[in-house]
Image (tube, rainbow, N blue to C red; front, side, top):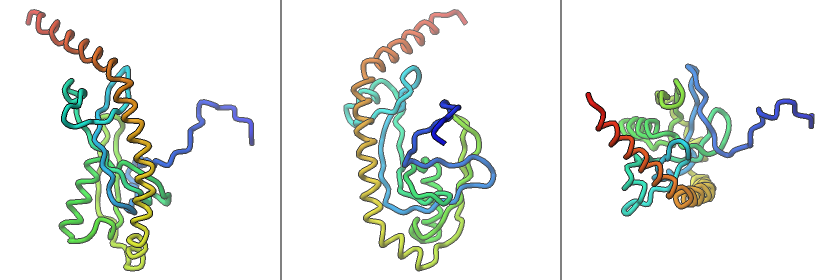
Amino acid sequence: MPVVKNEQDEKRDSQFLKYNAGDSGNTLMLKSHLYKIDYHFVPSPIQRGVRCKGEGCSYCAKGFQKRTEYNYMVFLNGEVGFIDIKPSVFFAIQGIAKAQKKDVRQMSWTVIKMGSGLDTEYTTSKDDNLDKEDFDRVMSEIDSNTEKLTQVMLKHEEQLDKNYSLFENKAKLQSKKDDELAESSTDLPL
């Protein structure tokens, strides 16, 4: 039906997948190599991520916490796409795979997402071993899947780079306001 009555509910299709919240969990299979991106999140009023430039990064100098995205091409709940699997999920998967002496792509994973916003927690566990045929298929596609992931991530990094320059002056002002607020709060009697 071409007529849409609730325009506010319209969402743009995205290649980026998200975990579903709730006890039932999410079934996750990794289908590429890791694509890691360091960035800073600049809070309100900007509310955007910017690329961390490493040494000489002005956002690091201003005290914005450095964060890392752990991006993969995945099979998540029956859909193929891309996801930042989140640091806690990444390290849980690495730890379990190392203990099992298996490649992270040899297993399927269950990821349970509870909470939202800053209170979000992820619980990760091994779901099952892939049978040899499925694992061989993943490995035969890994280079092409990693190339697809790389193309999408390069565009994402381009945007983070644009944001770096675009919000640098606003972040300076925000940082200065935060410093002034901190100074004024130390002037208050206890």
